[in-house]
Amino acid sequence: MSDSGADVLNNGQVLLSPGMDIEEIIRGLAERDQRRRKPGVGLTWFIKHEPDVAAPTLTLGVRGTTGALMWSDATSGLVPAEGTNTEHVDYFTVDGHLMVMSPGAEVPIARVQEALREFARTRQRPTCVTWAPDPDLDGIW
Image (cartoon, rainbow, N blue to C red; front, side, top):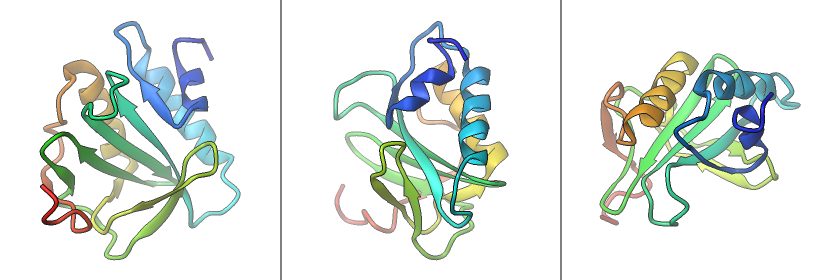
């Protein structure tokens, strides 16, 4: 893996830059997923284009054939409208911090990959996902 590719997955927060190979990052997600020790628990990253804490963030997770997506920006906290999990699901960052994914956050892994590609390309909330309010954040925005 090159320094500009999947090595960025060694941190819980990934800052995307124009020269990054997103396909290499997707392969890196799959490799890390294969090394998970607990099948019912996923791995997660916070994907941004800017280091600012308030920057729009695509939180994504991998857990076998399933993944998770959450979107946050200055005005919203969202999960996929077609999300499959009805309960909270435990995901962990690469440095071992628990990130509980909200009900509705899980989707097929192909959708997670598609959303990452779109976010990397457009720098905007992915439109390949129909978004709904995150039930855990309802009323905050």
